Every structure is written in C-alpha cells, then in structure tokens.
Length: 465
Image 1 (cartoon, rainbow, N blue to C red):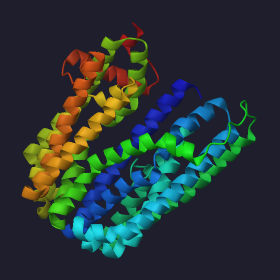
Image 2: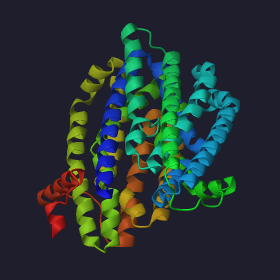
Image 3: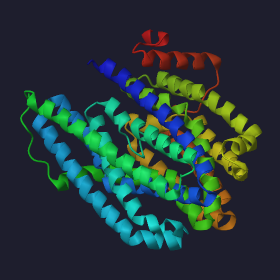
Image 4: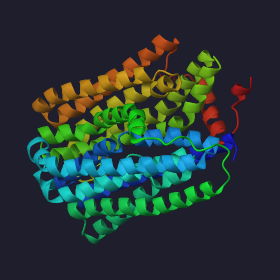
C-alpha cells in the first residue's frame, strides 16, 4: 500500500468513523434523556466524564508513545522489537489502569459524596472501576492499531475517547432497545458501557495478536533493538500523559464543576447542552483528518503564505455550516430541545447558546491547534492548554458558586474563546501568519477543492501550480 493510499484510506476511515460515532452518540443522548429521569441522566453524565478523564490517567502516556515508536519499528521491519514494544506498553497500561481503578475504589465514594454531590453513583463505584480498566486497555489497543497504520481497526475498536464505530453502534443499539422496552435504568446503562468495552477489548486484542504473529513470521531487515525498560517507557510517555490529562480536564471537567455546584437535574441540562454543542464540531472532522500532513508539508517546503491561505480557507469552509447551525439553534433551540428530549430540557437553552458561542469562537479562530504542533511549536500548544484550563477552573469555581451550571457554561465559553485567541496570536508571532477563518468565496472554493482532492488522493488545481 502506497503512502498516498494509506493517507487517503485512513482519512476516509477516520472521518467516516467520527461522523457515524457522532451520529450514534447524539441519538444515544436522546435515548438517555428520554429513557432516564433527569437526575439519572445527570448522574450518567458525571460517570461518563469521570471515566473519560481517568482513562487519561491510566494510560500514563503509553498510547501516544505506542503510536510513535511502533511506527518507527514498522518502517524498520523490526518485528521482534515491535512485538516487545507492544507487549511492554500493554503491561504498563494494565498495571496502571488497575492502580487507577483501585484508587478510584478508595477515593471515589468520598469524591462522589462530598465534591460532586452525586451519592446516587455510590452503588455503582465497582461497576465504574471495571469500566475504567476496560476503557483504559481499550484506548491502548486503539493506539496500537494506529501505530501499525491500521486506521480501519483503530476506527472500529476505539473507546470512549476516540468514538469507535463498534462501541458507538452497539451501545446506541442496546440502550435504544432497552428504552423501547421501558427497561432502561442508570444501572443498565452503566453495565452496557462496561460489557461493550470488555467485548471490544477481547475481540480487538485477538485481531491484534493475530496481526503481530503474521508480522513476526516475516523476515526482519533490522536486528532487534536493545530491550526497552519500563523506566524508558515512562520517561518517553510522561509529556504526552500530562498534556492528555490537561486536555481531558479542560474538555470534560465541566461535568465535575457542574456536579460540585448544582443539582443532578441541572447537570442533566448541562449534559444535553454540551452534546448539542458538539454538533457544531461536525464539519471540523474532515479538516482535522486532512490538514495535519498538508500543514507539515507546506511548512517544511517554506510555503508559509500558501499555508496561511489553506488554513484560513478551510476554516472558512467549516465555519459556514457551523454558523448556519448556530443560527438555527438560536432561533429554534427551545423547540428542538423540547421535541428531541422533553419539555424539561427546554431549560437547557441558555446553556446551549453560551456553549455554542464558545464553539463558534473555536472554529472562527481557525486551525491553530493543527498549525502549532505541525510546525514544531508543541510547547506553545501546551502553554495554551494550561492557560485555558486555568481560566476555566478559576472562572468555574467563582461563577459556578454564584450561578451553578450557567456559570460553568460561561467559564467554558470564556476559556475556549481566550485560549483560541491566544493560540491564534502565537501562530502569528512564530510564523507571521493568521489562522482566522475567511469568508471570501474564492478562497473557500479553493478549500473545498483541496478537501475533495485530498479525499480522492489527488492534488487540487492550485496545488499543481
């Protein structure tokens, strides 16, 4: 398989998986909001976001290290070294996930009772601990496939962080069936998440083992590298680990703040508003899959002005549908919330509008999140993430105490807006270009041609010049 075919094939699988998973997750939100009481849905939302955050703790950065180092050994055809690398990373993740689960079993009851005000989750602490272990191992499994350039399997067996096809479809189908039968409860919802995660790990691991056996049976062109110690693995993975935890806390921590300062019913409102807000990110899926290699290539070849044109035009291309959706939500948001979820969730309308403002700012400032790391400015990316988390935490504690979930939504929108403006200015400072979206018709036409050409494995007309 050629590099071009790998990129195009991977882009189509990754983009398709994200679109399908997003659709299933949105349907799942409707099912849960209608099948559970507001209090139960608020508890489920807290549980889900808790697992997403703690999964990043349990992986200790091995998922990112696996992708990078497995890719190198794959290119070198060092099959024995690849097998040893994957085995060590999996052992580390299993041990650390068990340690994280044990810590959660000890500290979880206190946190749920005194910090998150979610005592309704106390009977399910053991279930959540099992879910944490399964989801953490599933995340490592996903990145192992990605390190082997098998984007198809990574897309199929992705977990709670990467929205895998199998998990999204299975969970949506099972919970939908129970809701239709009138038997969906908080307990059954949590157990379904655990069982689907475990099944995905078992099936995915069997496929991965078979793949590794086929590779190790092939002749190697490189001698096996010296053994990689656990200390080496942790030293390589800790920067990714810290960055992943910061991002997870910034994106998912709103559920914790909402639980700490408001009732479970109000947390349910915040959860529905956040899920609705994610629809605005839909058009970003394809651009996030397509832009990184283009940005890296244009920067490496010194075509900085063309890089600016591409980034701004692609940002404009995805801003248009997001603006249309935002206008629809502003005009008909209450009616949509009532029709899709129930009359109770009409009260989520102010939260939805505030969160959409933050997401629109994210899109309007452009793909600086791609430009910084793809041009060797990862540290500035980390600085921006830390700044965003600090703003969200500081404002969240203050406004959450004063206004509950409304204050949490304001803190999220403010942190996203400020962080995106700072990130855009960092790009301007280091590269001398702007990333904010342009609505010029000609450049947007070029962007659409670029995206379509990339997906088809060809060059856009202006790239041939």
